[in-house]
Image (cartoon, rainbow, N blue to C red; front, side):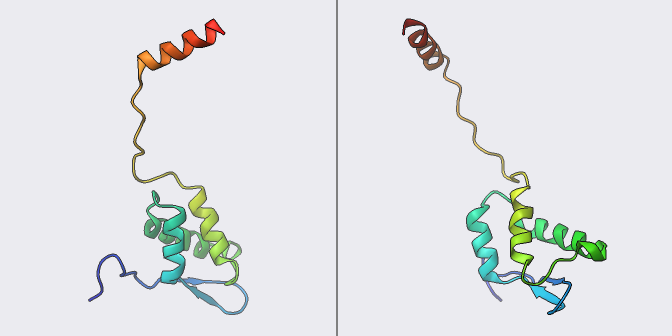
Length: 102
């Protein structure tokens, strides 16, 4: 059995035009993970699949699927919390004081 890092379930999108389907590849998933490391891609891909197949006019061409998914990911909120910078009151006051002085 493949390791959990390399295993990816086969996800096939029904498309309009020819060909009638588009299969998600590991190469595309690896590319997307590099661009969007804080997005739960598999969940978002499944949501996009349901959306495209819910109405005929939502379907994309096979050629346009990668662009569609990258745009979909770009509108997603990160699934992992981002580390916040610790507020430094002393630094803030020094900077404000320096602004007033100049």
